[in-house]
Image (tube, rainbow, N blue to C red):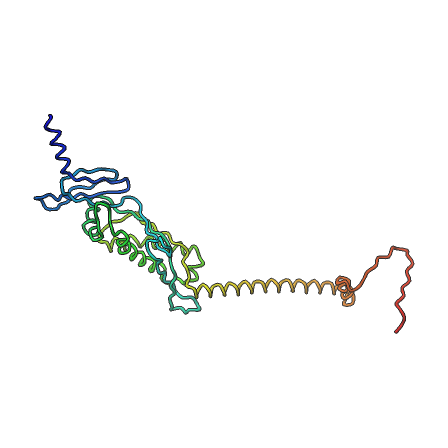
Length: 284
């Protein structure tokens, strides 16, 4: 019994090990002195694995991950190009490019067989190691951004830029179409069903400066036209009132009424029965 403990300590001292957090999974490959490198097993989230000396371990994220695309400094990638059709000003056969900001959420498929295939086909090219995928940003740019751009371009095809910019329902339809197209394009590029749980959220796209200025000028013209229409309605209402007064008072009566209203004639109330002498002044 006393000899077993030192032997166990020696055995453990020669072992390799890897621990995974609750949002991580791992892979272990045998890499002994006299054996070839070969896959051994997967390591579930929140586990510790003790393996043979010299064995290789690789760690990958488990659970939801995000790819943010936009114009901020902390974005994973720049804004996507939303290619829309031109409106009447640009011509029916022209295209307009808007800047599309949004977020993609996804998960790595952690089924052991699928995870192993992902590691051997993709992960090793992007610096897979015991501390995770070193070039995670490069991996997302290659396998997520390209399919995202392709999906967005197809979803917005033929829709004019004014409709996309102004109509929330149209933008929601484009977003839904992107979510339908994206999984197939990603897995087609990757060569396997390595990802799941795709969800794309798109914000209102940003217009290039020349279109934003043109839209602002159009809006100003619309507001000015609306204000003029309201002034026209007011003038017409005043004219109708004048016509009605003329019909009741006659032209001279209306002029007198208007003079009194404008303060050009002073009206002095005289009690009933009071004698009143009016001196029009000396004749000229």
